[in-house]
Amino acid sequence: MSEVKIIPLAQLPIRSWGKVHSLLAKDDSRRRLMDLGLVPGTRVEAIRRSPLGDPTAYSIRGATIALRKEEAQKVLVIPTER
Amino acid sequence: MILVKNPVIALAGNPNTGKSTIFNALTGLKQHTGNWPGKTVLKAEGKFNYKGTTYTLIDLPGTYSLLANSLDEQIARDFICFESPDVTIIVADATCLERNLNLVLQVMEITSNAIVCLNLIDEAKRKRLEVNVEGLSQELGIPVIATSARNGEGIPELLEILHDVVNGKIVPQPRQVVYSKYIEDYISKLQPQLDKRLYGRLNSRWVALRIMEGNPKIIEAIQQYLGHSIQLPTLKEVII
Ligand SMILES: Nc1nc2c(ncn2[C@@H]2O[C@H](COP(=O)(O)OP(=O)(O)OP(=O)(O)O)[C@@H](O)[C@H]2O)c(=O)[nH]1
Ligand SMILES: [Mg+2]
Image (tube, rainbow over all chains, first blue to last red; front, side, top):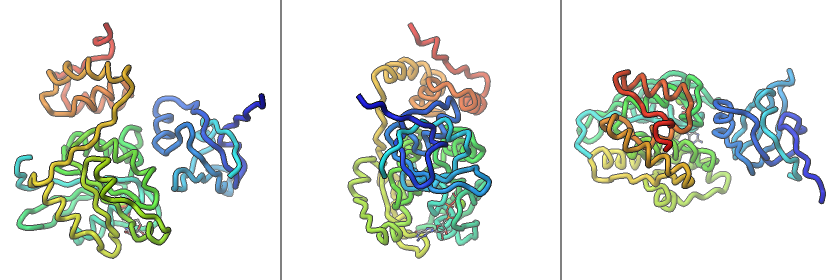
């Protein structure tokens, strides 16, 4: 059986895609991430990183959303083709 | 619904969906609009007349949710929950409808007097997206009006539906989210306890869900609204 690679969203390279696997965040921050559309199964693209390296803009369910690194660390994704 | 003399209408919705543009179109005022999210930071108020009724319109900050705890969300949530507007218009972006439905469902859980304004329909068309407005309305159980607020399209229809809802000619029947049996069992234990204490001041199903969710800040906001003479039941009370 091939192993599925799971990485934090923060490590998803720019211009690549991932599928949300699970959230490590708790309470308010978990709620916030889910309300932004980051529920298991959602496809996300990393679009660009701000010049200072943080935050990063992601395309999530049709909108571009900026997440701070500490937030994106708490979202686990499976890298996918497009 | 009883005939409301001076109805209060709230405009809620995700950031950047055109709430302030609609507010300006209806009131003739000049709320800040522009192409970046988070322009409306506090709620703005205006008035307009339609068919002999004076409406008060409240432009709320854009939010993705009413359940987290940024200041914007608190303002929007407190208004919709605790100020009980006569109708809440949820302005949704037709170009990314799916992500807007989260807030639509959250509002529908609090109040049944809700209308969806499906805005930016011109942008959706440009992107070759077609929305089945009638189908959406049937699925949600509440009126849905397609608008392109920047050029005034659909605004007369929105006003007419608003008028009909305020006057009880249309009674929205929002479809409720049904949770897993485990959660529904708790709701049905909490709800009678709540009905005894809330006297209809808040939707008891919504409060039951918040008690289960256990977000201390939201529970505190509810408690504050009710006053401390009313004690909310705790989850422990209903675990038998
Ligand atoms: N093409 C098009 N643009 C629109 C429409 N409605 C609003 N806009 C534009 O969308 C942008 C955002 O509109 P606002 O009215 O500021 O949005 P808002 O929902 O109040 O935004 P926040 O207060 O930040 O949540 C503005 O540039 C508007 O001119 C529409 O129906 N079609
Ligand atoms: Mg606004």
